[in-house]
Length: 400
Image (cartoon, rainbow, N blue to C red; front, side, top):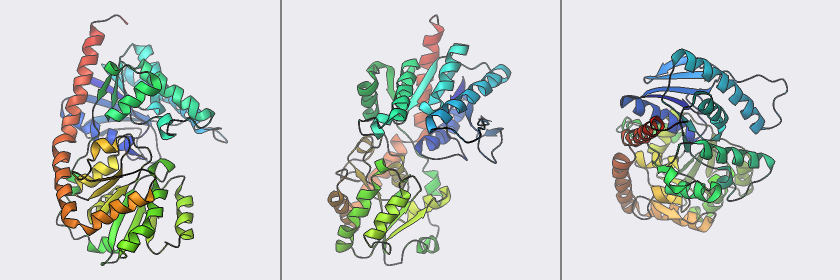
């Protein structure tokens, strides 16, 4: 089966969970016999065409515009026009394809136009929604346009994939997507990244972030409002009262980074909270391995790949009882869950984890077993291929 996959992100262009999902899913699909061509916007220093893990990657140059675009949505629409033109050349020279698989609204316009131009069935994976990020609200005209694009993608798709039941219910609620049109296939993780670090002396690396006697608490992710980083910062005085030898590392960048740094300074916590900014994938994995606790106090989280990464690294996790996180992490079994937007609850989860390492180790082992049995990419690829086969069979049996 030949699949044309559209994604706004693909290595080396990785911003959030979407890019990591595609980067891990594609090789697993290839391993199971799929021929996959990935269409993605170009980035500096990345080849326009290459074979990566058996898949063919096509990077289409973004259109240049003097003075830029008035907003992100408009720039995305223009990039989609370039993707559509580039995809036509690819289909004509390297096609035909059996279906299109598109990830989120960012490339949905090109995916929709290709669907109709070549009468190819469209599978859409929805990783998050704009209304969900706004906690049920659309903040401004741009958010409304993104919401409309998301609705259109779910409407145009033959089948829709979500990574959690929570996201499936969100689509039913926001877009009236029929429940029988949605397949729930979880996100995944490759534990080999962390297995390669077993037995490696990381003491010198850890010393860059915390003293030997300090407990290292870690948060990884984009610094945006919905990740609840402010809640974590405000929890730290309570944590330090109970466990004074604690150091918090908040790794990542984003639009809220300056505001969080200012809050840390105002609370006189600069000696106990470190904001290193962007860290490489390799350093991020090392941070998971040296951390005593990983905390993700999100206000909105469709899945929560960072929690899964921590579980694969055998790091105790503390997460908000929201969205997909509550499906990935079960309280007192595979991690600790806390109330969202509640510094006191967040502090309790961290303190409990640090003060009861024997219970934390039990949860870590439960979580790791689940990583191996439920969240392996081979299992996820097999479920995705089942969706592909269903769509291709149904398409063959119908008129357009």
